[in-house]
Image (cartoon, rainbow, N blue to C red; front, side):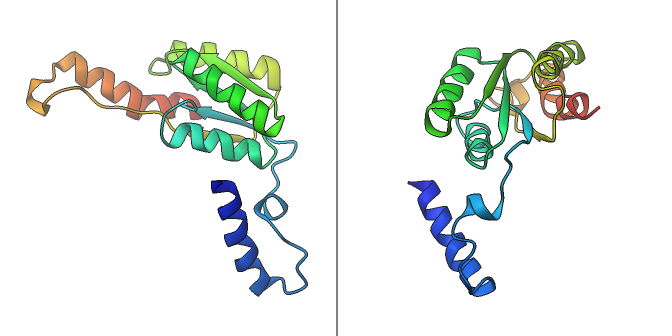
Length: 153
């Protein structure tokens, strides 16, 4: 349903800029066919899974890297069913350099190259700010600050 509304909005926008009507939907406007993407945190209940779906909808092959392997497998199955797109699932802890190295090694073994990187992982502590331990803050910083750096390098 969301894809239909998005396509209609783009069609309306593009009708003003492409009066001949040669662009009728988002897939025609932005094709990612032949591109390969990593979505770190790609099984997340919010943005991560939505980004994974949209990239696949536009034709990209997607590697979902997530600490929640079963959830990543569910999202991958939904994507494959809906779009017929190749989806890799790599379960791992991306808050460490070693975890990122292991996950990206798996991806590059399958994809050979990657064109798109989306850092959509993150999280916070549980409970009140003052109740967090120093170890909690180290974990939060590793996930939110260092993971994107590890993935980008």
